[in-house]
Amino acid sequence: MAPLTSTFLGAFRQYAGKLKTMRDEVRTRRMLDSLPADLRKDIGWPDRYPKFRGRSV
Image (cartoon, rainbow, N blue to C red; front, side, top):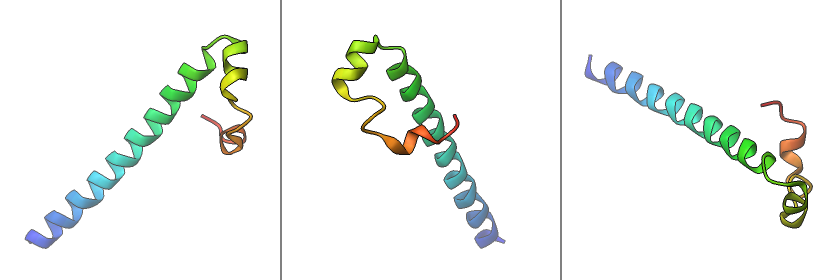
């Protein structure tokens, strides 16, 4: 029964890690989007990051 428990816990940790990553990406995007337009242009947001353009948050 122990291998089943460890497998479940491993899968749960992986899922929780993915959720945290998604949450961090959303938080970062919101923070960058809240910057003034001229500052966003200076750092190249979002033009340098095309993978974020088509992704719905």
